Length: 178
Image (tube, rainbow, N blue to C red; front, top):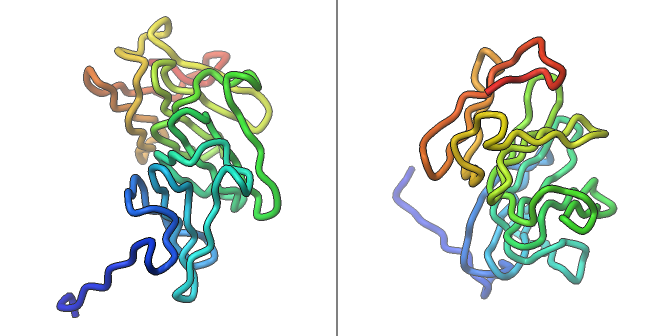
């Protein structure tokens, strides 16, 4: 009825009280990304917490996204990207060859490609095998991509510190142009 508010904190089992992102899980729960405590999955009035100790690459979560294959992706501040298939974690950092250790935003296109907005290295597309970067060299107006959106035509919109960019589907090798 909108007249009742329930507050959840670390006192109730939440990993940390500083929340950076909230996302729906395919199983009906809610993913909560915290800055400092990792991530919490809230299901059946209970929190299950994930941190560096469980397999995350960083406890500073900036974005959580569940793809069409039910893999959960965590964009972090300092730990790059972590994927979680429900059983194990995989890290994608500069050490492993990813472009940035800061991932602000994540989305998925109609073809199942994942898109990552990074801290300083532009937009990165992942087709399940190869990471392809779109940077200022390709026309992006800034490398700090804070938000991403897929529009109804299949274009990716990338919000940066200096405005917004439209990454259009094309017949180029990468499949997109800025």
